Length: 505
Image (cartoon, rainbow, N blue to C red; front, side, top):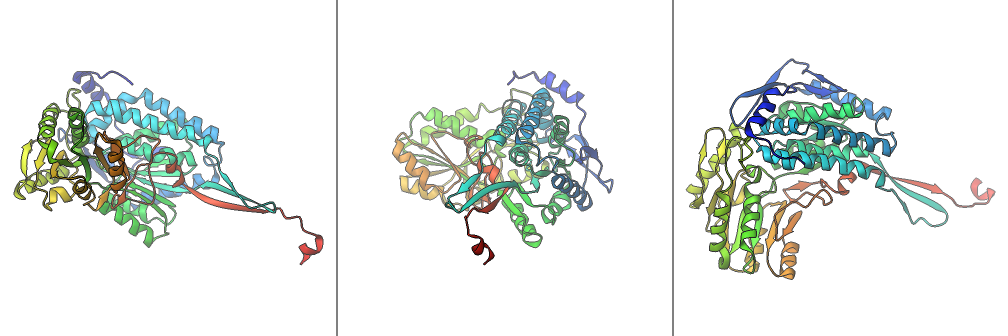
């Protein structure tokens, strides 16, 4: 979309930003009713960016009321589909206009490398919203084969008020993944961003209002999870929750739904994703490049990150040498410097957690073959552990950092068994020169997305979500995402030609 600027230019943009710091409800910025705030911290420097409104149950209740009012009076859901499409396309144009501002804001707030924000996050956010907007007037309802005496129409209606609870690793893009199909369906939406990363959600809500999204249709409630997230999950007038984040928190939202109004819940949770490299894998340079990207992109703070490299002994040594060579090219440092491929972890708490796994891996007997170091500013070097395959925490638990653990196998069957030896099932990768063998492996691995001879998550046209503890209730992306923001209704019309006396009977 655009060429990268220099560090000095990005710093100048950062210095000129006016950062939003209150919730956005019913078309305007509002402080928390309590007047409380919390600090938004730049993880790379430890400096305070802003004091953000610390909303609580009262603020959530107010936002839900405004969202319900907007839904019930039809100011958005009853617009002609082409009109809703044009509003969302205008939103994408506004995001394009302010793309650099949003990219810098995201980098400051989340510690993400500016080159990722500029070249991946912002363009994908735009593409996602536009793709779902374009789908609005191209999704058809159905009729059922009811015979000559009846007509059965199957229609979709917007589900109502939707709560979208976002993670901190891809704040802007995950917002787009959710509000794109939700707004396309005609729902009213309340976004609860992660407390670490509230800024871009607030700015996009403001731009949506400018684009013509009516008051009350897109709201952002900022605050801590127990104070704002839980009340949203428990609210009896919220019809659906779409959540992306940890499996433990996802379980809580299922509980909140059970304890309240049985609202629909869609969860996209954690992963412990395998990359299987078989003995006939070719072009090991390509394999190494893909593994490094999968393991260390976004500092490993990615639910679909490659965290387990399951590699056949015949190619292991050569592959590890090439992986280490590529990994050394991933410079770590100031997120606003476009030469750096890795920035800071999102906050001090998460930094301590990841550093704890570095210590655990060593204590459990795994050998560090690359990295293992960390430094002030929440920076962790790309790290590779070579393990003996025993059941240790770095192979079992989601680290959510730039840590890759290697397991050596001796056969295809052992590789598949190792890949499936996890309670998660989000993504996986398979590398093999034998097409049939690769497809058999992809079919055998229990994961929502399996890539062959590459690392990735598919694209906007393919559903994204997981098996087992990685997901529940639906999928993000693709036309399938639209289904979860709608209710199916059957309308049955009697067309039978009956005699008058039959009608009386």
